Length: 156
Ligand SMILES: [Zn+2]
Image (cartoon, rainbow, N blue to C red; front, side, top):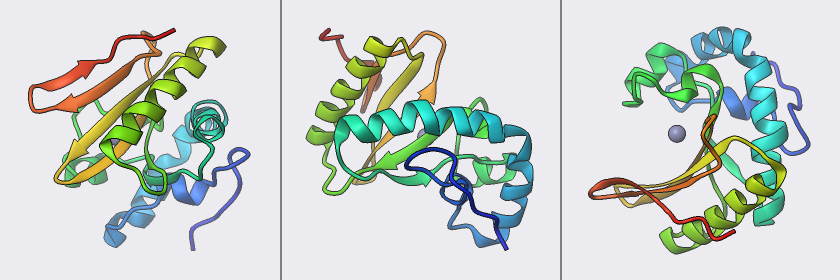
């Protein structure tokens, strides 16, 4: 059984480690242990603040990923998901346009608070989501395009 507890106001441990690859669920949970602190910080600051700014529930599609899970889903070798420092989220009714608009607001809020967190609008195979990750050079908003990741101009 996967233990469950609140990591922050709006996020639970279970949703930060869950995966649809059931054969890796237990391994992913066990390997997440050294990264619980990272995940907690990500939830309490980045994700809670994004949730408040957007004003809608955020559903976590992918949080922590162990090496095996990260490879299986095609994650990059240096993915912050492997350190518990990134999460992919969606909100109800998300589209490319609303993701960019909300991403802009979230990044502006992170800038106000001095959070080093990037927001990436991912847009692959007809799916749109926000990848939120700790980055010392953040906060910045990036949008995935056919030409790669393009940084959106800061509006604040
Ligand atoms: Zn991601």
